[in-house]
Length: 83
Image (cartoon, rainbow, N blue to C red; front, top):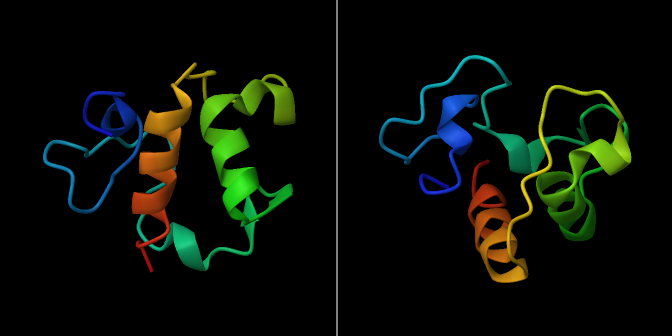
């Protein structure tokens, strides 16, 4: 997550320097019912949101990340621990 730059916009517990305020804090993201208010919070949807948020909600503030499948999987696995 540090390498992907998530902390530039999000506060991410457990990631040094991830203190961004442009997007929501990711603390407790695993407990959320919806992602971005539109997607049910499932592993597949979280992966989609992280990789290509513009395909889900055009014009939102989160940029498409173009992460590799491996990096997206690792980030999703970590986010799902944030309860």
